[in-house]
Image (cartoon, rainbow, N blue to C red; front, side):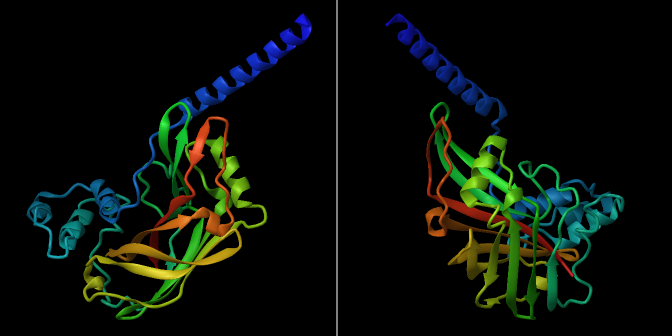
Length: 283
């Protein structure tokens, strides 16, 4: 009897050690979840690296306009202070032609950097709440810069929009979680997710002068080969010669045949989450 008990003891001990190792690995590699996409915050990050010259100080201090946006003239003046700064091109004066009509393509980044740390490039991803047995509630955020697509504008409407996201390149703060996500999404069989606008969206006047647009875009969202109608709350603004758009939508994963991934220390994972994007468009 002693030998079976001894074997059982060692089996339990090894299991406990393995669980502790997994927990420790989660705790060591875990970081605070990045903030949700935010138009104003991204614009501020774009302009923060440029020093505003003395002659532009007064313009930079100009109160926000009636639409709640900072003076684009101040941004343009800031951009001219240092042409070597990467933000300079983004903060130039608005579209010289005054006409946004046409097709705009998603601008992808060759080196997107750390998407968990205040990115100023195009990306898409998700946010989902989970409960871990050791640290309680945590928001897991997965993002990828492997995004492509386009929008088509007229003078008064967003006529069309198509976005494709490569799901197998999503990254969170934890590579162990990433592998479970790929399994849940079956990325080997369904490598991409797509969104296609199904009805035009009215645009406000002044968008070509840097006014902020807020609205809802409805379309077909396809994940894991299953398509459902989705509504994205979006904000957009012309920044120099680029359009910056951010948006998010609540998604029920089981509606797309996705079962939330689990791990030894994961008590629960919500079936609902947020799909979000931050996209720069150029033409």
